[in-house]
Image (cartoon, rainbow, N blue to C red; front, side, top):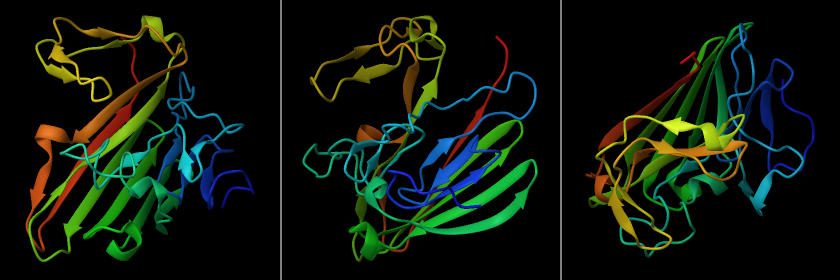
Length: 225
């Protein structure tokens, strides 16, 4: 069932009374949560104030592509690419009481860049898997960036911890500062959400040859620490 009219741009695909929700605009996941056990919302999203800017949905899992920030050379507009501003075509591949598989696509002429994107979301009662496929449709090699800018809902961000980043390099692209994580990362602001980016960007940007395709994957689940 398509979601009711809302201040969101475009329509949404809703299941389980909105606990699972995907917007056609930007192919953006807005809500997912497990169906058993401690079934609380995993993603942060405020339906009362959903647009960060006109046509930009705040919260859930925005797709930043075909560039992240202002691109590999910090000289591209709009910020975080055009994918999150596009209306994707939707195809529901599988739909059941505890399973949803939906695929969204956007063509190069709508993206305004020589790439064809296909974004697939698989939701189950225990996990969610995202897959982004990209094909370079240009006539020359082109750099490509793609990042899932995930807003995770937390009880208190000051108690949240990101493990496994010790020794990894970091860079604040707003201030130009950079350094190395000396330990795991804990939150100190925005007490009800933590934002994590997953994908390929900046020094890890991809260079795609004409006709070349590739894919990125992300899986989200819950557990007890």
